[in-house]
Image (tube, rainbow, N blue to C red):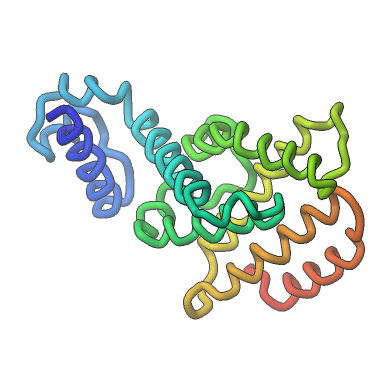
Amino acid sequence: MSQDLKNKIVEGYQKYLLTEGERPKTVFAFCETIKIEEAQFYEHYANFESLEIGFWNELFERTIGIVKGDEAFDAYNARERTLAFYFTLIEQLKKNLSYFRLAFGNQPILQPNSPFAKGVKGLESFFNELIEYGEEQNEIAKRPMFKKLLVKGFQFHLVFVFKYFMKDTSQAFAKTDEAIEKSTNLLFDGLQKGVVDSAFDFAKFMGQNAFA
């Protein structure tokens, strides 16, 4: 019953946000719309922000679970694991795209206090795994003193992918797939060698397909 209530709150909140274009004014007003007691809301969430953080966390955790559950995952190198993560993430986003577009907004940077940023912070361990695996496979040069900066680099790459996807108007989001592949190649080449060629290829792509 508790899980049913939690699902009702999440679904009701998404519907409200998509219909009204903004958060409810108060938790009480929102609970009135989905016909539950205010105290029932607080059994699961402290406020609307914690609800949104939970939704981002669930998205990322589900994506990682799908990627790691693929039989081919263990055979992938770090670059391929990163690509698999992003392609799977995009497929998950498509299932609820209107909500995610509204929730993500038009964030120019990884704003530290936004629900999205707090959700991304939960990916630190996954990005650390990718980096450490890349070091083991000699895809990433070992730079122990800069490990935190490398994780930040992966986080900002994620923001880039989100922003590009949210604005992509190409058929079946084909340009997003290209952007993921080229930017991931640039990221990994930059962590070891070959960055000039990848940068030129990516700059050419963005020059032809960047959004205003």
